[in-house]
Amino acid sequence: MTQIEGNSLKSGIVGFWGIVFFSVVAMAPGSIYLLASTTSLVYAGEAAPLTFIVGTVLMFFNVIAVYIYTTKVANAGGFYKFVEKATRNSTLARITAWIQFLGQMLPFVIGATVFAWLIDVSANVLFGIALPIYVPFLASSLTIVYLFLVTYFGVKVSVRLAIIVGIAQMVFVFIAGVYILLHSSYNTVQVFNIQKSSGGIYGFFVGTITGPVTAYIGYSSVVGFAEEAKFPKTTMKKAIVASLLITAVFETLIMYAITVGTSPSNISAIANTYAPALFLTKQYMGIAFASIVLAVALVGEITSPLTFGSSAARVGFALSRDGFFPRSFSKIHKKFGTPYVSTIFVFIFSLVVSIITQAVLVSYYGVETGFFYSIIFWVVALTFMNLLYHAIVNETLPILMHRLKELNIVKHIIGPTIGTVISGVVFYYTFLGISSPLVYIVPIIIFWLALGIFLAVRKRGVKSPDLDPGNMDSSHVEK
Image (cartoon, rainbow, N blue to C red; front, side, top):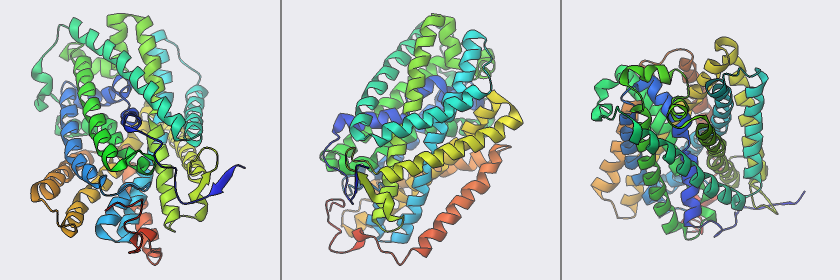
C-alpha cells in the first residue's frame, strides 16, 4: 500500500474557482430540476418559489459567522474547529464535530437514493417503462462506489470534476427553465404569497426544509478544504459568498419557471408525477431535450455529495489528529494525499445506511414512494444537523470576537442570531406536523446527539493539540 501516516494535508492546491465550484456542486444546481423543485411543490404548492426566497435569507444570515471564522481558522475540522477556537472547550467542539460528521456523511446516502429514485421515476415519466425492482437498489449502491472512488483519488480530481459538472448543470437547466418561462401563459407574482401554500404554514416550512434549505446547505461544506486552499484567509470567505449568491439566484429563477410552467390548478398533478421539471421540459421542448437535461442533472445529482463526503472524511481526519478518533483515521495516502481510512469509513457507513433505509421503506410503500420517503427521511436529519452546527457556530462567534476585542453587536451577535432564530422557527413548524414515516427520524436524531455527548464527555481528558498555547497560532489556526 502506498500510504503514510501524517497529520497535515498538502496546502495550496485548491484555488478560488476550485472552492467556488466545490461549493456550487455541493448545492447541486441540477437538484432544482430533479429533487428540490419536487419537494417544494409537493409540500408548498403554488408558493414553492417563496420557499427559495426564505431559504436564501436564512442562508445569508447563517453565512455571516462562517465568513468571519474562515478569516481566523484554516483547519480540516471546519466548523468544530471554529467552535474550539472561540470557546477553547474541546468537549463542546467535539459534540459539534459529531453533529457535523453525520451532517456531512448523509449526502452520500441521499444523493445515491435520489439517483436510484429518479432512474425509476424518469423511466416511467419519459418512456412509460417499469424497471425491475433491483435496478434502483443497484444504481444507489453504484453511486456510493463512484463517490467513494472520486473522493479517494484526491482533491485535484475532485476539483476538475466539480468545475465540469457544475457548469454543465447550470447551462442545460438554465436553458430549460428560461424556455419554459418565456413560453408560459401563467406568469404571476402570486407564487411569492405564503397564503398560496397548499400545505399551509406546516407544508410551507417542510417545503423550505426539503427544498431550498437542503439544496443550499452545501455552500459551507467547503470549509474542510481550508488546509488545502491557496490563501485560505481570503479565498474561503469570498468563494463561499460567491457560490451561495450564484446558486440562490439561479435556483430561485428555475423554481419560479417550473411553478408558472403550468396552471395553478394543475400544480398538484405535476408534483405527483415526482418529476415536475422533467414533465414540463418534455411538454415544452420535447422528449429529446428533456432526456439530455435529465442526463446532465443526474450526473450533477450523483456528484453533489462529493464535497460533503470529502469534508466528512476531513472531519474524521481532524478528530483523529486531536486524539478523539482512532489514529488510523489520520493516515494520509502517499500518492493521492487523501485521508484514506476516514474516506473508507464514510463509504461503508453510507452504503449500510442507504441499503437498510431503502429496503425497509420500499417494503412498506413500494418502489417510487419508498425511495421518495427514504430521501425525505434523511433530508430532514441532514438539514437539522446542518442548521444545528451552524447555530452553535453563530452563537459562539461573539465569544471569539470579544476575546479578540473586535466585537460588533450588529455583525457578531444580532446578524448570526437572526439566522439561528429563523432556523428554529423553520424546524418548529416542521416537527409540529411531522407524520409517519418521517416521525421516526426524531429518535434517531436524539440517539445520535446523546451518543456524541457521551463520547465527547468520556474523552474530555484528551486535549486538542490546537488548545495548547504553543499551537494556537499554528498554520492551521490563524490569529
